[in-house]
Length: 331
Image (cartoon, rainbow, N blue to C red; front, side, top):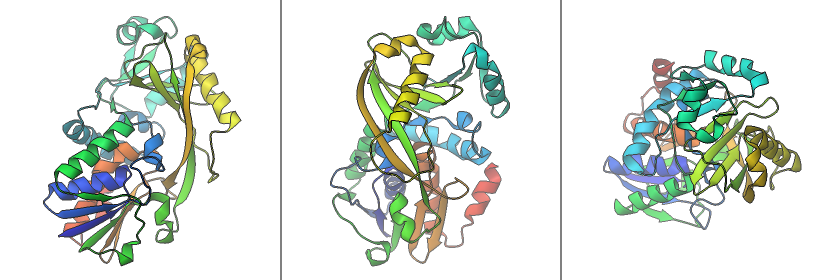
């Protein structure tokens, strides 16, 4: 089949790759002049953390997301399989217990266990949860790797080209435009997420650390060479613009509480983006004639994109494919 994919964020590129790997002729159309900047995928954390996500979202996200870790490992050598560490201040150990009750796939660590994984955190926390099977990646490098793989398969990526699904040529059109697809999925809303990138010359971390801070749960994702991405804000707002003063203070304050040495870190970058979400905060694949919509990935873009792309591919091959069964079997 001749396939058109609209949108070159993580949803669009993974969908294009799944279809290209199945032998179809694929083209990708992206309205932005560059791959990455301008999409919420560019500012993502890149955590492949299905078990951790179970603690704060529907279990289906974890059940389906587990499948994506192997997909990324097979296609992006930069996938780092070092697990996730979850910690909390001594006064908030109850939060750690509540987190543990809502998820699975972890081991409890004592100070010696924490020291073995992250020596720089050894003297700051007495208990931690370790999710050894989780992974993470650098979203920007991953997007570039997907584009390179698509090019090697003969897929043309048209940048700076805005099209609408109904007027796009092809046997099938995959609409992966995020909030840009709201004209056809009016239930979509934007949830603002903000992040800060810092560089520390003192702190060393080998894996993402989730800090159950009482005011703002924080995640710190290592990018290598002392660079870390800080995130976790979820604001029910569609306001555009840079990170607010309040969010910056909360992110940096939580980071300082994780380890005081981060008070000396350099701020390299800050950014905000609107994540596309549906009322139930779950991703969705739906078909309308020859148009298949993949949207609503919310804050689970890199975790959910591969599995949603495969569901979309099944919908493409079978117009009667029941996407609800995919959710039911994984619940």
